[in-house]
Amino acid sequence: MKNTNKSMIVGNPDNFHYTSHTGKSEYVPFDLFNLDKIRYEVSAHITKHISRRKALDILPDEDKFDHYYNKLFDSEKMIHNWFGLNDAFFGQYPLELTEIPNWKEYQPIMSNDVLHHTNTMIYPYDEGKITFRQFVENQKEYLLENFPIDSINQKEIKSSQDEVDKLFDKCLTNFKYSPSPQELDLFKSANMPIQSTRWLTRKMKGANRKFDLDEYFNRFEITLQNNPQPIYKLCSPFNHSLSHNNFNADTDTDEMNQRVKNLEHRIHILIQDKIENMFKDWFRKKYVGDEIQVIKIDKELYFHTSRTRTGFKV
Image (cartoon, rainbow, N blue to C red; front, top):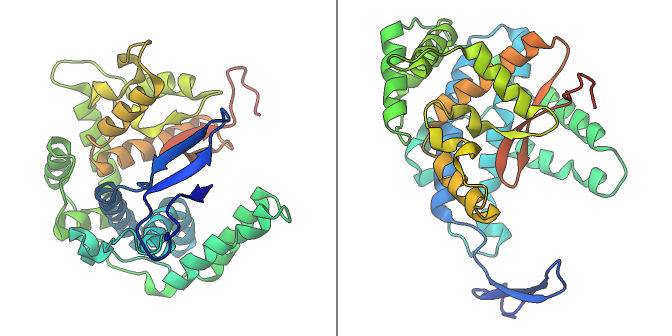
């Protein structure tokens, strides 16, 4: 790939020239990133991180690192990497993350130096020196060595069902709602998982509609076998437009993907996060010893499992 504006480093690039998979010579505008979308994504990552970090504070010490690695690390790494966008693209993207409203509430566990080093750990895999599994194991071991467990210890608080209901009701009616520090402190309560589950199952049932969560997860799992599924599809009881079934079969794939991406952000990050965690727990209890993973495909988060429709692992 080459740039048609030879002053790329010192000026504003206009277009990129490249040869596509069809063999044609193509020109596209240099507009790889939408800063408003990045700010929204970072804000959502921060909200999710804050809520999950509250839970980290009250876990037993032996469970803290696993909670961090499985629930906080990806958000920290994404936020850290967006910080380097402007430098990586020679000043073309003036992005100041500290101006995001909820930035002041963000408290990463790992330092910038540690998060930056995890990026460089992929190089041996890129060079064919280690397997991807080895890279993942090396990265996890490095994070464990640098995990500041002594600095993570706060007192548990009490939460009422009414407080939890009011918080999630606000999130349901406004997908951009920014919870207050006091509302986010509710995630430090040992009662929060049970109380938020009560809210979610009650809301999924609707006013006069019967709803069986176990049956719903079973149906979703059928679509998941042999075929990774986007996490947002689990949110369809709150927004039926999120289901792929609502798109006409003749709809252009690119158009459908863009519509789905737009619709995804009509669900608050805390509601999507709750459904994601509930499905993971349900799956692990149903298939003891089996893992379900979250992977990124085309910038979207998907569930993936090794289970197949035949019952054999792949």
